[in-house]
Image (cartoon, rainbow, N blue to C red):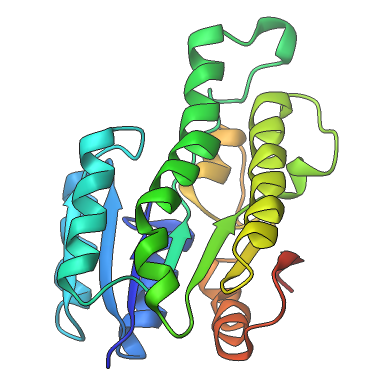
Length: 226
């Protein structure tokens, strides 16, 4: 039976790179992003390799998450959930003293609440899989204190802890929280507007590490992609 992965934030960056790798390995995909046009481009490309269901929308929306779960169910059930969609809360990310509370709320909704809510919806499917796994994309900002990264870092730290608790509660699954390192992505450029980020590696450079993670299935926990 073909494996199925649900990947959020898959229109560009690491999400798109992971989707390409899994499509090449024959996985069915359910992918989403807020940018519908970019998502269509990725879906068109990957649709030549495998079955792809692309649903544009915001992961904080209840109905959108339900659509993702239903799409995965129709493909035989999710074997992997990649919570990759993310937001900084501002460009550049604001200091905590000046962080607008609506933007801070959005930062936590996108980076913490939405991944937990989508995981809740997909858990029944993941439990039935012989190799069910949740992969939450984290950041070094979750464990290191950087000026201007208080909102994003605190949200990712909360996601890390939720991942660790979920691993205890769902011992039949793998639950990984992974810091992919600084990458040359749109999000990274938003963090450093106007700066040259060409020294950062492209997301494709760390994809082999993620493929190895999925193949070897190490114990649940927090990892740093090397």
